[in-house]
Each structure stands twice: as structure tokens, then as C-alpha cells.
Amino acid sequence: MKRVKLGGSDVEVSEICLGTMTFGNQTSEADAHAQMDRAVNAGVTFMDCAEMYPVNPVRRETIGKSEEILGRWLSKPGNRDRVEIATKVTGPSQTLRDGQPYDGAIVRQTIDASLRRLRTDRIDLYQLHWPVRGTWAFRQNWSYDSSGRSKQQVLDHMADVLEAMADAVKSGKLRAFGLSNETAWGLTRWCDMADRTGGPRVAAIQNEYSLLYRLYDTDLAETANAEEVTLLAYSPLAAGLLTGKYQDNAMPEGSRAAVDRANGGPGALGGRKTPLALAAVEAYHELAAGHGWDPIHMAIAWQLTRPFRNVPIVGATSVPQLDHMIAGFGKTLPDDLCKAIDLLHKDHGLPY
Image (cartoon, rainbow, N blue to C red; front, side):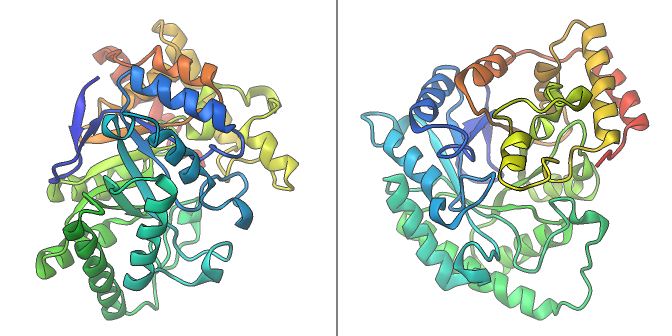
């Protein structure tokens, strides 16, 4: 599998990343360890986690469990040196720290806590899960209000956090620093502040990106290219929508939507499952079939054709799901199919 540099850092990772957010909830520890073994054998050496995982739902009593499961796998002989590990500090959340936003002091604490759970002496990429000032991610772009925030307060916060990151890098606890669910303005300011203070520069930004959700294509893509920042694209299958398993009002047992509904949620995949989205999925499936492609393989391979450096983060709740995705790794999307996707996107832009 091809290797990709994270921004201007010296961290090199596989061009596809394995997400771990279901480990400890929808995915048992035994299955999680089997997935990681399968992934590494397929050349996927990059794994992404977060202190708040597992999700669906996020519960106070399970926070940190995914890191612990990953840590027990990392502690097996030889595993740690075969992989690159990313994790994140949670943004303001009532489930964790009672809504208290992270600052430099909290980041220092959370880095040490993640290192303990991961059973390692270093984290290859440490990310801010979402900005403390808010974000338009998670379907909040329809109502996001960025007014009323003091620019100086934001900059002071960035300087404080970067100081903590710089100390962690200097001590060897971290190799690179990244963002998540960030905006173009925020990414620019973090880069500027790093240049001004000598703190670590942003190496990666983890934002949602898929055939159905392409907000990154404009301002953020330009900013990331100019600042040499790699996109870590989460939900490349649109939380499972692009598999087609939710078509015709289906709700497969054990699926993300079914688990959400069983826990009192709407089963709408975080606002992604809309009539417009389901229509777009049908169109993409017809397109894939017409070109002889599996739609899951097409969705992942398409990401690697984009005009910016990016690493899709794939996730599976079971080994068979992961095996299906692995079967498509390394396939190159032909130009005629790429052009057809561009045309189809014009009819199905931003369906959720």
C-alpha cells in the first residue's frame, strides 16, 4: 500500500486509515483485535482513535474504552512498531469534563491519560476533536453562527494549546499535531500561530468527506494545499449510507442506525439519512454497476483521486465488513468513471 506524509511532519502513514470508534460498543474486543490484524496484513498501518470513543452512543462509563482495547493490541509483541497511532482530545462536551473546554493544562493531562490507555510512550498524531469556539461540522452548517466571538480570545487559546503541544513534542510524547472538524479560518489561524510561536505546525485535519458530503472541496482544500496539511477523511461511506444497506427503508440489525434507534435516537445517522441522500445513493449505485465497480470500492477509490493529499478513514463493525473493503484497496478509478461522478454530483450536491 502507498505511503503518505502527514503535512510537513516526518510522520508517514498508509494511504488508508482504520477507524476504531466502534471498538468496545458495536465491535467486541476480540473482533477489534482481529480487524487490526487484518488491516496490518493488508498494509493499513495507520489507526485513528479518540479519548471519547466508543460512540453510538457516547456514554460517560465507556469513555476511553476504545483506546484501552487498542492499547491491549499494541502491547502484544511487535505490534507498536508496525503501526502509526492517532487519537484526539474531546471538545466541549457535557459527557466529558462537564462541558469544560480544553486548554493547555487539560491537553497535557489528556495526552498522559491517552498514553496510559494506549500502553505506549508516544502518539504519532494528536488531534483536537473539534474547536472550543464551535464548528459547522455534524450538520451544524445549516445554522452555524460564528458571530460574537473575540478574535483575541481565540488566538490566546491557540497559543496556550500550542505551547502544551510543543512541550509534548519536545518530550517525545507526540510526533505531530492535528485538528478535526475545523474551518478554513481556524486552520489558517492555527498555522499562523504555530509560525509565530514556534509551536508544532498543523500536519493533518480530520473532517468529514465523501461522495455525499463535499464541503471540504472549496475553501478548506485550498487552505490545506497552501499550508501543506493532509486531510484525514472520516465517514468516506457516509456512515454506511453509501453501502446501500439503508435503501428502501431498511434498518439492518446491528447497524449504526439500528443501534442508535435502540438507544432512543432517531436512527438518522447524525442527520445524514435523508430522502435526498437515499436518492443520491441509488444514483451512485447505478453508476457503479454500469461501470462494473462495487459501490463501496468506488467510494473509497474516488477519495484517492482528489487534487489534495488525503487519507480515507474506513471503519467496520465486523471482520467481514472490513474484508469487503480490503478487497478494493489498490484499485484505481478510471478517468471516465471519475468524470461521470463529477456529472452526477451536480445533480446530488450536499444531500444532507
